[in-house]
Image (cartoon, rainbow, N blue to C red; front, side):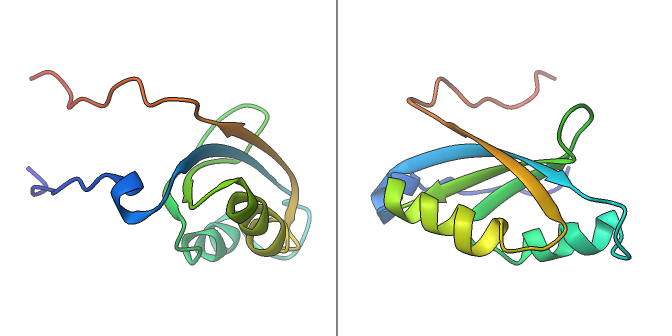
Length: 103
């Protein structure tokens, strides 16, 4: 067991846009994957981030106040990291469900 959590609705806090962003990292630079990941971790609107296989290096979940705020996060915070060469954004239209792993 890792602990317990209290889940507060992001919309109750004014975060109305949820998006997932595929992030492609250029690993031919002197930076390591972990160094870039640590930069991404410093962006407070990113609430979850996974190392993944396939086209992208990382998949991040973001909450933003609105689409303009989402654009600002993508352009000014994520795409401004030099090692990030490409992003693709998937806006969630509706959260279907979240559930714990069946035990």
